[in-house]
Image 1: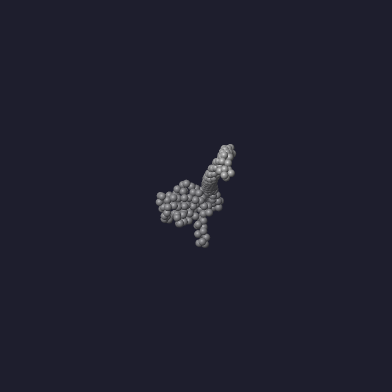
Image 2 (image 1 turned 90 degrees about the horizontal axis):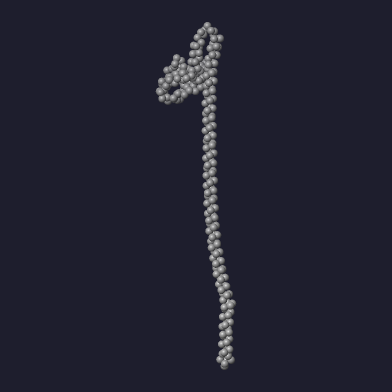
Length: 246
């Protein structure tokens, strides 16, 4: 060693000094830095993990939010649809109820009008009878018309088409069907309706239905319709036949 110019003792002292310096530097400088770097690395790793977890939580929150929004929209649409259906049903019920009430009022008004019309025609029938008798008495003279009750009976026969308890127009007629409609110029009395009904039922049978209507245009007598068959015993029909013959 000495031949190489190296002092062994000095070399050993230098090596020891270097080792001590290395230990001191490592203990007081390198080790804290390494420890700090390790802690920093762990901190960064935890931060990245926390960020990943936060990102996952945010993504999950967005998914849940979308689900909640979609569910809310669905429920909202159902509520709107149900509300619309209930509103339409209520409106339909109101319209139907109003139409029914209007129809009832209309039917009631028609019945009242028809009843009032028949009352007026009944009153008119009596007035026409009185006027006819009075006019006959003036024109022919009281000496020729002694029985006013007979004249009234003739007028009743004129308007009702009933003579001696029988329907004049049905004399010798054979009817067949399930229903009949009888038209008179003025409303028939209950007694006259019973006579007409019984006379028609003799041909049609007890199960047939008989209806009555008033049409002043026929002037007098009766028009009986059974199915498509019309038996015209009205005064207007007789006048029309007379015009055709002339």
